[in-house]
Length: 422
Picture (cartoon, rainbow, N blue to C red):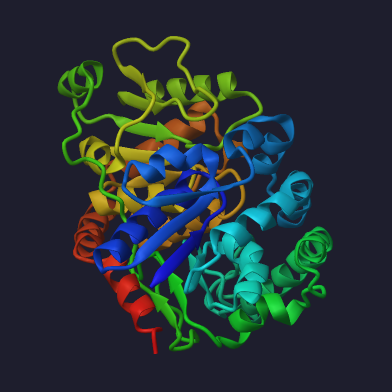
């Protein structure tokens, strides 16, 4: 099959699809990844065809409007902010997806990719399948990741959780339909998309859905239809042949395993203050620290011998050397820490990060989440102390880490996709 993968977002929204594309290519399929130009080299160096998608995601998220979106805790306001960022480029995004998917037999879309590829699937008359890294299918087990879970002991928790999906679908349709349908009309002349056109297949489970996360972290809900596959994480192994730079190698050898702190592409209104809180918190906890600079260039003003700042390193190599992974709650980082068998502490900013923070705690592989708004030196030090040497967490993360290492998420996803041929 000729398969086009459409994914929109940051590196964490692209990397798992490179792993999936490699699995599909190994099975004999032709695969193209349609994503932002920022990731062209990342995609092409793995031998995968690339098709550009409008929008410099790093530039968008690093300007003031992007930082406000990343810090927005209210999901409705976050969707509104997303609309403002998408409006100037939505026509070009639609055109790019139409061009990238021409001649394919199947379109796989990440959550945002799926929502923006509906017109392309209709124009080219090919199936569009949701292949997502976060749960997007209605269930009574937990809410859509943009919303907070209703405590299980309270009445109507299941109804609230299921309703959260439909409410979010409706909000997305109301907010995004105007500009999306304008681009659709101009580019194709087709009538406007209705709610059922976009979300009907998901609600009624008419097509397969493929989720690239593990049941060991997000148990499969009892009310998922047979068409919904939870395959396991799609890991892209990058450590093969990689050698750490001398400063990192020397730092790791100079003392006990450090605490990793990294917030990926998520920024902060005052990154210098956040860095001070992190460094001071590590020192109050009596721990050496390894800081990831990230997109906003997180730096330590007083690094010393106990703190090292790095630009990056493969998680599949790095996390095995850590005592604790402190991160923002990205699905990929949570998965990598779990596979490494290392406890984690999640500092969620916004979007789906509180969901993953909750999953980490519920699975018993990390401590109680520390929301960004509560991050101070003393709160971080306390959270580190409560998590890093917790014997119950250590035992659970070793057990579940081994289970995740034995999964073949990519292989299972390829099986599901090939099963759709008939």
